[in-house]
Image (cartoon, rainbow, N blue to C red):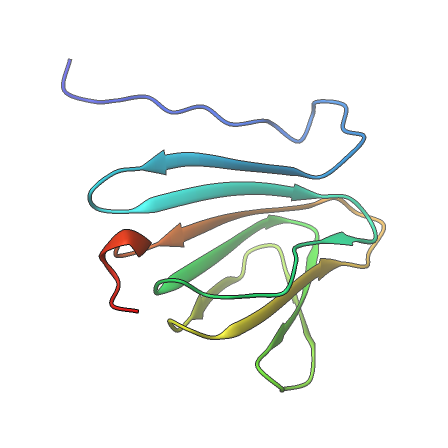
Length: 111
């Protein structure tokens, strides 16, 4: 078998807290899957690679560096440059589900 299969938590499963899963971490890429309930988010941090955020469901409120917060909805793909300060939250009633693709793998980024 040439392919490798990866799994992740589905939005249909009962959640009582946020879900943050590292799905793939290989030489080429890191892919994370996240489910954020209302009024949950990620700790403020700096992007450690070139980041793509693919919003599958809900509304993401994101503040980058010192810019104003913006809201993005499902069907959006955001590209966040390396070393950008990020603040990601879900303030809507709907579950926020998104994938984070980091390429190249952060271990290969020059600090």
